[in-house]
Length: 361
Ligand SMILES: [Mn+2]
Image (cartoon, rainbow, N blue to C red):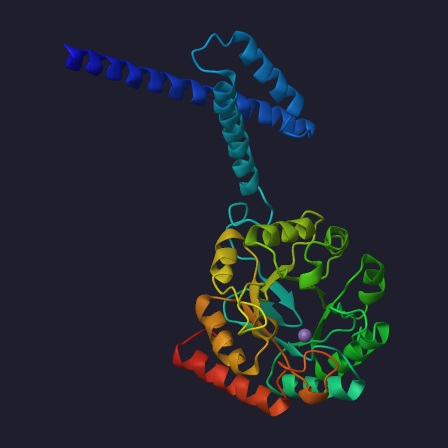
């Protein structure tokens, strides 16, 4: 008798579960409709006053046996789930997302197509220190048939007493050197106030790791039509990185390249930890080209080549590294810049590797 009773009660529970499921889904559909209306009106989807009202109404009608705390808990979960669903749908709508645009973004700069398969290379000194120093590196880059030179004119340094860069003078040196050697300039801009002036000197605006969430700067570069190289913040999640890129694209600039440059972890063997898996994740989640900066991620000369190989093997669209004619007297990043013979060797080895494994050049 007891056994039969239990079976009957269990059947009753199964029926109730299905009924709850039907109701919860029906509720989600209604929430969806509300979301559409709110989306059109441009108002926030979460409304705390409305939620308070719903909870009060439930309290008024709760006859038990569940106590009010339990009822609140259950319904808050239901409210949250519906909002989460709306957020997930919203994420699919990001302009930078692969779901929004399935084909790869290809950016044409100085005769180089970035993101069309086959890695692009960005080399150059950490900081622009003088015409002679920059020209020596440029000569070595163009001798390899490469198209980009990087160099910092504005340097956001950890300490305000460290070398802050040559500023406009540095941009002028980069421009002169790039014209003499047929290169495109990749350089960091740190404030919206410098953008207009910089446009004449720069081919690719770099947003540095420390400025990845400088939203006013992101919006300002989004309003230009210059290609942007956006570096991942030192402690930024991939989701935050993607949303930073969205800030730029939301203002109309679609020429964005992402750059994984290492993140801060507990590991001390390297300056940062190169998050190599970020590359395929970013390639899956967005349609943007992805670079790997092997210099700042590792902070070690002996790791530049193996990490560059790893970047190419995992599908990065480009590699970035720092080169200085005499790193031991560099005004920034002395530890990790390559000198010219090391750079030559690095590039030869990388070419060999690409040939050996038949990577598209
Ligand atoms: Mn540097």
